[in-house]
Length: 304
Ligand code: NDP
Image (cartoon, rainbow, N blue to C red; front, side, top):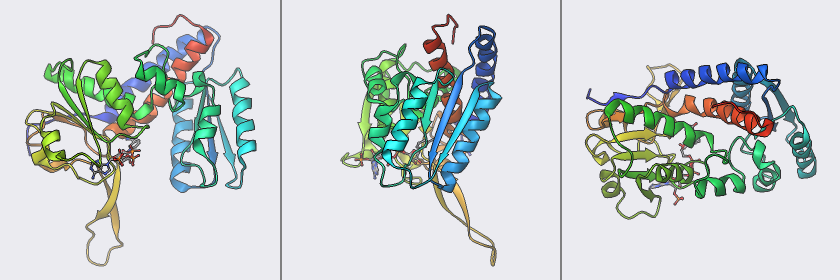
């Protein structure tokens, strides 16, 4: 056991979703129903689960929600044609292309075909560029980084911790997670270090962090003694690992983060658990982006 504040991502996501549902009622009353289209190519079981929960969340928020299930044999021209159709559809404000695509298809070409104003995953280079120049009033920010910041803000508020001027270390530099989180932290005036697989002294780098964000994809790689006492720890990693099972029982698995959670509890000032931390925030931020896209496209004067 230890003294770390546990940041409850499930509860935070429910709060965000409740705000979205309330704002959506206001937007609908002004004659605009936010619409989300989710495009799935192929039959990857994990992707099918994600797509289903995104559709459910959209409906719960009061959105118009459509799902396109395309066969794994779909060619790039057909996929691009669907994207063009959705770009032009006034009932659709968010287009989500579920990744990964089957190997034959190049995701960058399809992502770049999505209208930046409807790119609710925030992966289009226009949105990455708007984030990089700090224009958050126009950017659509990737969902997991945006959700990580909501949890970090909660922790900072609870511990009366000022992000401005703080040492922040982000481990991981993917375009989907690490880089955008680093941009968001920089936008909040943190002093940001981005570490990755070539970083020489990873432990020493992590030990400097008042804010430590792990987005690596390696189970419990960041050990408890890498955590600076009192640090705010955001664990983005979701790793499925074997779990001990009783004699004779079928092999089981469990989810762990990139941070050794139990070891870190006695050191961190606050920490997000896995599962139940950043994970639940991602879908909530997808809904937030869809609502934001609808408000911007519709030119509504609604505070959100
Ligand atoms: P990527 O594999 O794209 O990126 C991993 C990053 O970690 C890379 O920058 C890589 O460095 C770095 N890295 C790998 N090994 C090491 C190491 N030994 N030491 C230091 N750095 C290392 O993963 P993603 O960014 O897409 O995802 C990261 C994690 O977040 C995963 O566990 C994923 O499951 C999870 N995730 C969770 C989401 C959620 O909803 N909560 C959503 C998306 C992802 P380099 O660039 O040098 O190769």
